[in-house]
Length: 146
Image (tube, rainbow, N blue to C red; front, side):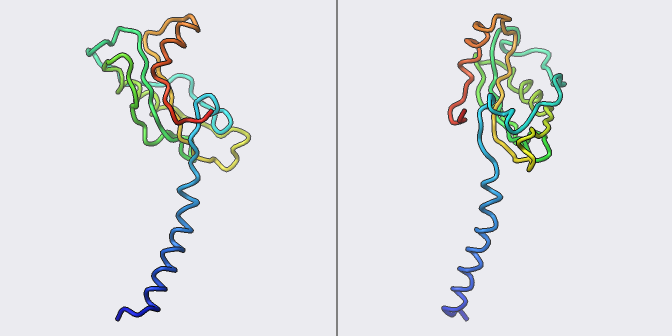
């Protein structure tokens, strides 16, 4: 029987469930790569990646923006290729590299707070910092506060 009391009970239970789930969902913050050091420190400076034998523009200078979330264990999750400039087959290789990153918490992040961020992988880039920055510019993603 559907009484007003049972409807109220269901409403209260739903509100309690939302109250418990909301803090868990709100724990991940979205940050720019330049501010990542405030939360996480990259531990491995060299990573393995799967490289294709052939493909489009593999030998041309370019960049790939890869989005991911650093979990509370310091391992990237939800690793996705967001942008490839110029068009090439380097996306899977960049995704593979970022998936192999490992992080340790910074001194400010003693609760191991997960963060959503992105990394720009440069391929065949120039050594000159200004030219490198120009090559990376098209891969910058909006929506990541600095």
